[in-house]
Length: 293
Image 1 (cartoon, rainbow, N blue to C red):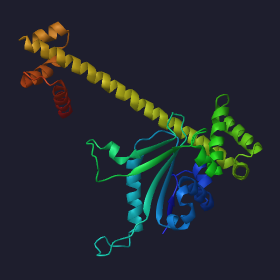
Image 2: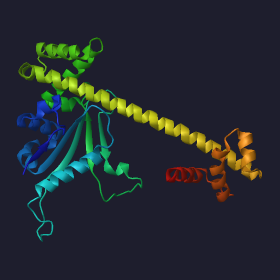
Image 3: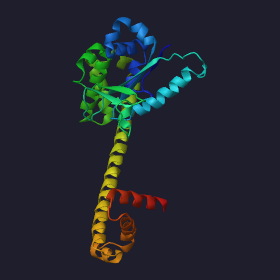
Image 4: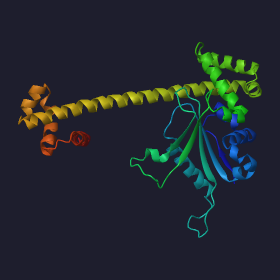
């Protein structure tokens, strides 16, 4: 049984358009798993390939793939019973990401589900491994030479970015398409699918900008949270030192030039933890108190 999946978006992308044809997808498979070339029909028939194309860095791909492959396997075994005395046979899954974003990334890397576990384990009992290939120009030359379509796709993206540095994006895409056709890069595909290729390239660009803005906002918010925590921890330390000197909350608030209502809850928690004064613990208890309010 064969199940083959490329990117799981409700809208097509250039990558999906190129590799949704079985022949093209098989050439990509051959390029990635060159060691299996001589036995490709057998291996392909018993593997569940999950290929993903990403233009933004996403360390959560193993978790995303875990959710997705679970749904796929549920569909495959829908007519079977899990309580049978017979072992259900499943296609062996493989998880691959083709990355061509602008953030610097290595040529190849391995993402593991266990990297997200809060407790590190030498031999995790649940694991999912994703192989990430950087397909930007200049990376993974052997892979690119083994799959000409992938190489030409990378060249097309490079041209879009080159023209986008000096032109409005829609015009940049149109210029990139014309340039690639003239130079034999995805020429047949672009001649046949010119309008759709331009449309999905613009969609991908807008989506990438949206994801980047969300990521930047999350980073900024994270920074702000970090700054707020740092200030609170500093205040906790100052209050603990004042308590060690025997000062009361009113005196502490006056000397630190803080409102009494700001000092009081920290004072109460710190006094209760004396003489250890675990700053992180006091901070957490303070957060829990405000969350309860």
